[in-house]
Image 1 (tube, rainbow, N blue to C red):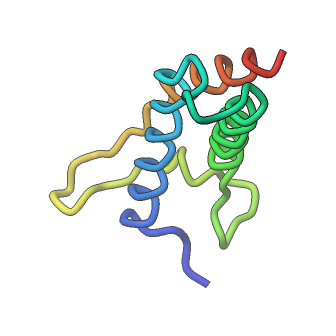
Image 2 (image 1 turned 30 degrees about the horizontal axis):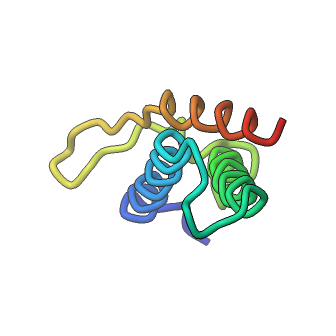
Amino acid sequence: MANWNIDMLTAIYARARDSANLINTQTTKNADETEDDWKNRIKTNWEHLELIKTYKQIDDSTTSVWVDKRKDESNNDIEWDWTAVDAAITKGKSVQA
């Protein structure tokens, strides 16, 4: 079986950034949700982020998909910046405390 391709990883990374953005910007519940619903929504997102960061190569279940040197279609190096995601995980967990 083949490993993850760049299109798959780029899409997953974009969704991770979306989840991080949600956590980092939605600091209070929406008017139409309970406090518990809001906390659960935030929890679902930070758990999703933690899971994404654990993805491994299909052919090698010990190597992260995020550490490989990857190239985009223009042969430029791709670097995955997890700073905002890590901050969102920490912030999301603090909502649960």
